[in-house]
Image (cartoon, rainbow over all chains, first blue to last red; front, top):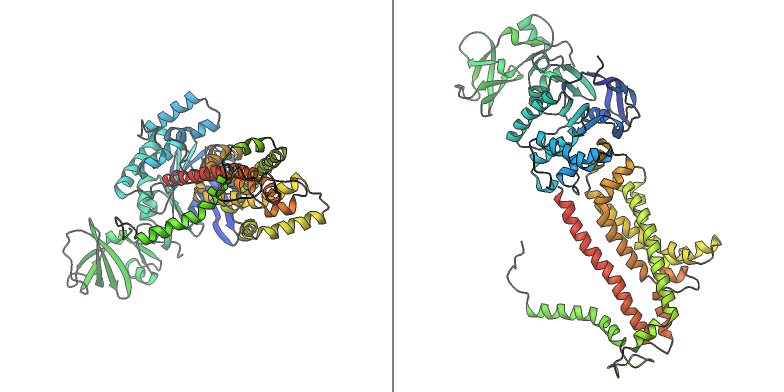
Length: 332
Length: 271
């Protein structure tokens, strides 16, 4: 089966900056694929390479088996939902959504009907006569989505589409995007810097850093079995443990990762474990994040809210299951 | 935010403001009054009598029509050239980054900062050097130098407020460069271009200095008026033409003002 999107050793350099550096990537048809990484990691450039706004410096890109280099954005069967939505302020909502069909020469009645259907799909029926300026951020986001979907793209690109929304709205949109993708069966490529968003929505996640892919895998893979210290730290802020520490508990001299929620904290007197000192608490609502100092090694633990906590500065004992200590292959 | 809201300004300030406005605008009214005077050799106050005969006289003077027609043609063509060049230049400067961008931006604005007499002398010597005879087109070239600036400034300001991703969105949705320009770029900068164009037209219409250096024997309306003031007869004809010039230049400027004001609201509402 041909991949929906395929990158072979793709690089995009801006002068001496390697925004994307020798990236290999295969996205399957119908997949919900997330590109996750900090800002400047190359994930957005990858998206723009698929859309056609950027051309690769080296390597080859194909979209459903067709070579994409040199093909302008308007000849690609790929549509984008922009971070700032990029709605046309001089057109009303219905004409915004129908724009793609209008430039393709679809007749007025037909394209307005299709646009109205697309608006129903994103649950904004009857909003066609309004101007983008009269809509809330969440509604604009839906219009941008409808405008991209009305062209029936083979691949839908989403550039941090939920970044500007408040928490509640973002959670709703996450669910909606996910179910929309299931219904339509279109390949979604989603760029985000929010690991929670990537883990909850995507079928597979690619973690980017410095223009390279650090790891590709299912959300569970990425979270439970990070390959590198960067992935362990960036996805879920895992504790990265140095080889000397790991050797004492697993017998192997390798880097390890230990999730904050895998650490149990008890008062110092009881049992064996890692002796540490509580240096700070951070109340997060459902959980409390503890900052711990284990003989110079800074660790974080996550405990449910309501747990009885020792006072700051007191000695504590840390315990964890050996299975939750994950060993990493690469030191980087 | 004003601290003195609800309080009215002191009386002395009001009088000072009124005097300032009168000083600015009374002389213009005087011009209108002299258009109706019966005294044709010199401007005496008060006018010895009032008449509308000068309108008929002006109407029948072929030199007035020639000057007016030349001015309108020059202004129209300079504006058209300025619209094309100014828009292209503004698009390049605001949408892309390239070596020397700031320099080009400065060089484009320079003609309006330079005294007209320098632009005029420079063009005259350049035309002489290149052996180009003075003609309609030399006037147009001279005027285009400052008309471009006006259009450029208006267009650049609008481009800066227009989201760059809108153009990408249009391309992404299947529109090629031409379609994107027609359906997205043009509607978003149209009012700015109209405003810039009308301002350019008005500037060109009453330009004297650059025209003196580039016109040769032809007379645009302002040049014709200067010549006319030296002549002893039919002086009020100049005033009639002056009234027409005020109307022809004032209306586009007012329109331009209202259009850009509305344009700001349109551009702002998209954010």
